[in-house]
Image 1 (cartoon, one colour):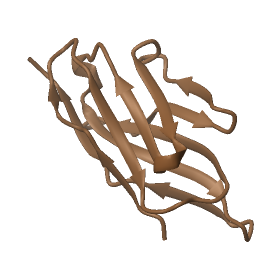
Image 2: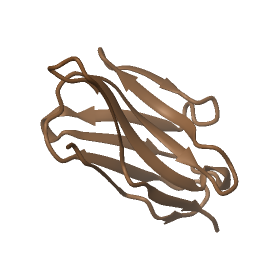
Image 3: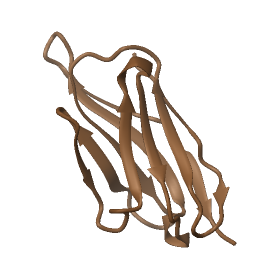
Image 4: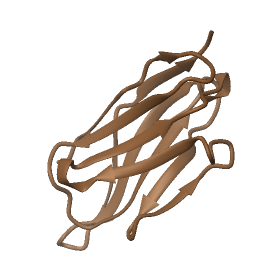
Length: 120
C-alpha cells in the first residue's frame, strides 16, 4: 500500500510564499495523474492543480499564475509552489495520485492533508 505524506503547510502572510511537498512511500507504477486539492472550512474539496503524463499541467482559475505544480520523479515527490498567497487560499491541502498498476487495477491514493493558513 502506497502512502502519501504532505508537508510544508504553515501560517503565511498575504503576499507570501509556501512550498508544499507530497512524498510517496515507495515507487508507484503506472501513474497517469497527480494533483493537489484543497478544502476550506464549510466548503467542498476542490482541485487546485494537476499534472499528467508528459508533464501537462492544469490549474484552477483562482490560482493560475500564482501556483506551480511539479514533480521530482527521482524522489517520488510532488510539489506545489504557492506564491502571492491570499487569505482565500486558506485550506487543508491534499495530494492525490491516480493510476493503474501492473495488474491493470486502478488506484486512487490520497495524502492526509496539510494546513495552509494565510493571514496577517
